[in-house]
Each structure stands twice: as structure tokens, then as C-alpha cells.
Image (cartoon, rainbow, N blue to C red):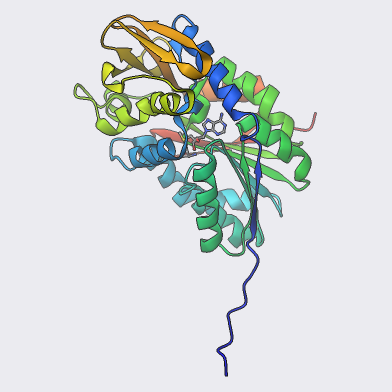
Amino acid sequence: MSTPQPQLTPAAYRFINLVDKDAPDTFASDIGTGLAASPKYIQHKYAYDAAGSDLFERITQDKNYYPAHAETEILTRFSPAIAAILADNTALIELGSGSSVKTRHLLEAMQQHQGKTLFCPIDISGDFLQANVKRLSADYPDLAILGVIADYYVGLAALADEIRQPKLLLWLGSDIGHADPASAAQLLREKMLTALKPGDKLLLGIDLKKDTDILHRAYCCGEYDDPLRYQFNCNALRRINQQLGGNFVTDHFQRHCFYNDVAGRVEIYLKSLLDQQVTLEAIEQTFDFQAEELIRLHFAHKYDQDDILQLGKATGLTLQQQWFDSKALYSLNLFTVETK
Ligand SMILES: C[S@@+](CC[C@H](N)C(=O)[O-])C[C@H]1O[C@@H](n2cnc3c(N)ncnc32)[C@H](O)[C@@H]1O
């Protein structure tokens, strides 16, 4: 007699891929534009492919990288309280979900509170997102997951039509801090909140202003830079070499990182160590770098309570509740979309 086979349940996940089709052209033109600009820049999103996402995950495990630890603490303690505030049958949409390790606390609380839950992680790092969704689905078989491989705004616009139930938009990691506060408010207002309806909610991780030493240890790592952060910051150069036939020599660049007290932000650059030229075959362009010249990679703006209230005001959102970690380094903010 043959042994009965276990019943195979169909995977409770699916994907929408909105990146692959246009990505090569957009990547090439964005990189060309950034390297031809003065000062030079590379958009931060291009740090993330499978290798970049993996490096970022390793940085979050560093004891000095307090934003990840503080946000984990808040979500561990307060996810049941957050879930209790939400309307029944709320779908969770996460921007830049990465590994979703912290999100697991909220997902568990939502499942506990409302039962069946729909989770829609949006991330530009496609392979990493797919692997994460498969892990989540194995660990939470009752969770319905719609993984969206896309830039934030494109993914959100697609979900706005697809999802009819109440929505909680989750944006962790203080990634709102990449833009200055006025531009962040504009981004939220014009490109994100359009996907939400009155009564829907936004749960936003926002890093707080604090002692410069703590910021330096988290982002800049003191006098002797950290190899992990260096590799992460060079990942876009590696991608450019691979995808655009570039000849960047990463050893010819060094990290340059500091807290700009006036602007209230950490600034991260790569600094050219010598006069050099870099050619990108795919776009048939050569770029000159002078010794000491910077490529801007990433800003991380820090907020105080007034800045957070101002963000709510500038976006027409009502700040419903806030949670902080025990050292008050970091905040998680629940905003509600008001009826017009
Ligand atoms: C700093 S990591 C944060 C990951 C995770 N949310 C956390 O808090 O640990 C940023 C994440 O956003 C994704 N990302 C960055 N820019 C993006 C964009 N423009 N559109 C979609 N995803 C983006 C990256 O791939 C990465 O997974």
C-alpha cells in the first residue's frame, strides 16, 4: 500500500513585477544624469539589489546601528496596541520592506486581532523581496501576501486600485529621512497618500535628533571606517560596473560621512582619492573625478517633535498616536487620513 502524500496547499502568495520591463534604461539614464551633475550623486535606491539588501541587513545587526534596534523594540512592545487601533480587515502595505523582520511583530499582532490578513510588501530589490515573501509564507501559512517588485510610487499606485479594504501604509527604517522634511511632506502628499482613503492610516518610523556621537557611531563609525558600510556604499558602483560596463575601481574611493548640524542630517558620500576617469560603455560616456571630489549617496534627516507635527500639518494627516523606544532615540508615528 502506498503512503498517502501530504496535501499540497497552493502558495498563499503572488507577485506583481513592475520593475524588469523598464529597469535597464531607467538605471542607465539615472546613473548618467547623476554622474554628469555637479555635485555628482547616485540615487540611494540603486544601492539595493540582492547583494545590497543583504549588506544592509548585516548593518542592521551591528550594535551601533540603533535605528533598527529601537524600531524593533517599539514594534515588539507596541504591535498589539497598534493592531487594536486598526479597522477590521485592514491590509498592511509596507514600503521598502527589506527582510520584514520587524514587520513580523505587527503581522502577528494583526493576525491575532483580526484573523486573516493581507500583506503587500513593496520593494525595488526584486530577488530579495521574493525570497522574503516565500519565507514569510512558510512561517505564516494563514497570511495572504501580494509581493510588489516596484519603486514605491509605482507599486502604491498599482495597489490603490487592487485593494478595496482599509489600508495601513507602513514605512519603517526612517527612510522618510532621505528627503528633507519639506520634500518628504510633498512626496507623501502627492505620491503616497493618493493611494489611501479617508480613515486609512500611515505608520511611519521617524528617527529623532540626538547626540552627534550616537549618530556617528551608527552611520560613520568613527575615524576608521567600517568595511561593511563601505561595501554597502560601493554596491552601486559594483552594479554600475556589472550592468553598464563601467570601470569603477572601488579602492579609488573612500566613504565620507558626517552629521550636518545646520541641516539636521547625516550625509554620506564616496570621495574620490585621486584624479581619475570612469567610463560606462553602455551609455558611451566618460566621467572625470578630481581628487577629493564627492559623490552624494544618501542623506538621513533627523526630526524633533515639532518637525513631526509639522509633517502631519503639511500633509493633512492627523497624528493619532506615537510610540518611542526606552532610550527615546526613535519614534513610530500613527497618522490618520482625514475625511476632506
Ligand atoms: C533602509 S532599507 C529598510 C528595510 C526595512 N524597511 C527596514 O526598516 O529594515 C530600504 C529598503 O527600501 C527599498 N527601497 C529603497 N528605495 C526604494 C524605492 N525607491 N522603491 C522601492 N523600494 C525601495 C530597499 O530595497 C530596501 O529594502
